[in-house]
Length: 466
Image 1 (cartoon, rainbow, N blue to C red):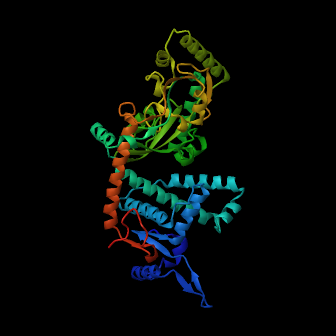
Image 2: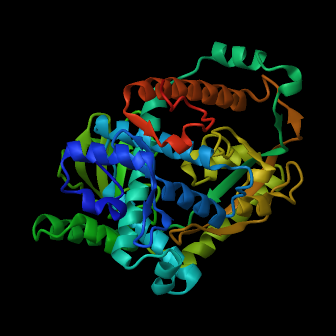
Image 3: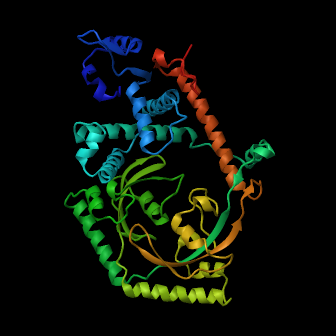
């Protein structure tokens, strides 16, 4: 069983029967008498869900955490917070029952980043421990680890419940038709944006330097027994995986990574390391750690060839020429994107950007990336921007030009015009129904006990069994 160890360490050697008796007694009272016969409040058990105990202090901590994040808690009561904690514990309990695995390395990395953020905000580790009333760093790290492990288990269980849910066009139509006209959602003003990207060219010598360096790293791992994860932490230029030793999980049914990387990884056996290969981001080596059906756990190291000032200047000259040909009417923006843009994701679509949040081509003004919004807000329809120098989180520089292809004013949802958004809403409703069905079923078959003081709560779910 997984209990909050800081409160129940002394219970570790008690027999199961005595422990059940202890819980029964603890549910009946959360007070004890001191030597002076004064009635003193102690930390009682709010609820038990499967293998998890929720303490009254957990509810208090959740409220404090929300307030520290700037969330208004004026209309949030203890009952609703307890209900949310019970939902999380139910997900986590059944995730463990279903043998769903969490990424401990990723959790440890997140804990590191969280503590770094706290130290940056408060000034020192001692102030952080004092603020959170922790006696030492290790106990603080352990608590953060358990909290994040529970969150990851909960998320994995929720994903498993809804992963295979799909929705048909007919279901989307029925969903939209069921919404009364006066209740249909209003979508904010949106833009469609297209761009042409020119990457600076890397010399053959610089490419070869990177390849040889990756070959040396591979040799050191295979022959000298060095750790791939350690090499990734030290040398990889991928900010998304460097802290976790280059680790990613690929899913054959949900391709999210560079095609070259996926193709190489899927050809490898467990434990095998690839030769250096190129992707749109640079040069890689990949190691397959584990194959789990449709999922493949990999580690990779990314090295990016150096871009010289001369290469950057040549890229600027090239995009200046492309822009002039568009402005002079020799080429349309779409034709220029297909023939000259170096951005694989948008090139074949005439340069039109895909919104990563919604999956369609529209960007709602109030939700746009601030940098992109700043670049596009002053452009008139059809106007081509001046060349823009952009640098990503890996430090890679490139030039681009953009234009606003379409504008959509704020409007009430229209089935044909807003089909993708309506489909997303319909799918979300179907997923929520599935989750509620799962919740109802699992509550019935899971051991749940709620402190008598909390049984009068008006929970969303039927936690209190008859």
